[in-house]
Length: 452
Image 1: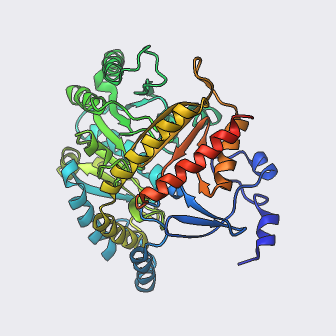
Image 2: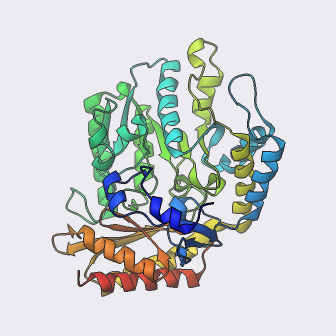
Image 3: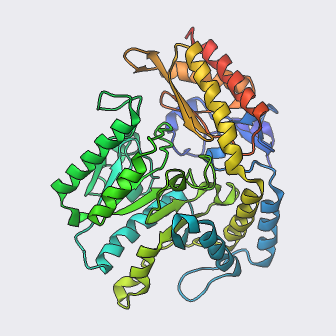
């Protein structure tokens, strides 16, 4: 590896970073992360930081999970790659499919389709939803309903069901036949209420109205995150997902749960759907499935959907979709080891406890700092929304948000910013002491930003 001087000199000069403006990155190069262990990262200057971001929602078990690393090493020696396209498979893929069926049994999910990551998983679920209805004799069911502020990846299908203009505007026109409902957001919503149950009921009514307008026989699926992540950690009322499930069932619409973030314990339950007592027809997963150590994902498939495909004997039932790295043996081996460690450590239970501590601390910061308009979260996915005026809820400036980030970094904690939100998604193995470190760094950042 080249030395740190080379890295700093060439930082952002020869690459375009995802989710970033190329010109901005050249003017203000990103932080260079050089090493990591436990729940901490080390930058190129040697500064050690508690990772309040968990990589990108995905390093649930931290950076020193040796069983996963060992599984990767051993699989590289045994079989570094082979295709899972028709006619061939690998041992780790078969074993993983068995483990996934057991893991998601409580969610009513019985089959898996393996992918290279979250965006791939969403794209797969959207395609399978359309194909399901064609096989079921309803070929006009091609439309999708989604939520504003929802995030579903970066492929054209995922970008089309995304509910944030930041991920849409520059790439339009997108997939036709996609319609959006309001987010179940108590802090910002069009219903003039902060009552989560009222908001949930209002959105369900709008869903019914949209179905009546579009025609139920034209709608393939409704897609949602059980807790909206990139849109600002929006936690719906407990009645919301069950209401949407009921509407879908009433009209023969599939429910796709995008659990790329929420699967494997982050909300304090093993899945976000299970948190709300809902069984989806399709579930998108990725991120924590390999603890971030290998690009991998899985779409989990419910019995109803599986039956339609598996009882079909026409060419239309063949899945003309997949990826070179679907079911990659190294990724599958990593996932098997990750599932075992995730279960052994019972990280969902720790996420629930630490999440309550973190949210309680964030609510105290809201009381202390006028900059904080809202504090919210579920399990170890939390957010502070920064405002310049609490009455109008006007968003804080970019400079203010950057000051909070920079000061927290100087205090030894990495956080993530998204618009006017400070988003927290630390590894699920953090302790109460780590929670206090995060809160202390944010307190310093908010104090410093008050004068900006």
